[in-house]
Image (cartoon, rainbow, N blue to C red; front, top):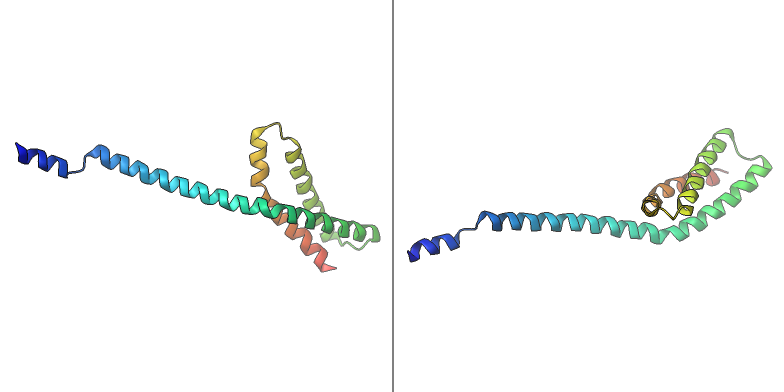
Amino acid sequence: MKNDRTKLSQRSSISNEALAFEITNARLHFEMSSNWLFGLADQIAAFPDMSMEATNLLRKLRRRALKGRLGKTDKKSVYDALRALQMYSRMVASEDDPLSCLDTVESVAAFEDHLAKLRSIVDRR
């Protein structure tokens, strides 16, 4: 009888294996979520510098537009970037909706693309 109990305790039960599997899944999901949040935090930390750069680029583009120094393709790109910036501003302004804040935070990466587009137009001269 003692041998039967020893054999049972040496073998893992299905519930222990299932629990171990669930722990592994939870750890992996937590790591992925944490990595996503760390990346997001880096993007958010860079946002003040990016927004100041965007403001300066828009000032330069305004001066060029007043002097008539923007080509047809540049104008289209500027309009696209302006639409994106306006939409971003509206998202930030509608802070009553909690999901809107998440959308705003996630759109920082998209903002980087529009900033790069503005940067390339200003650099063309």
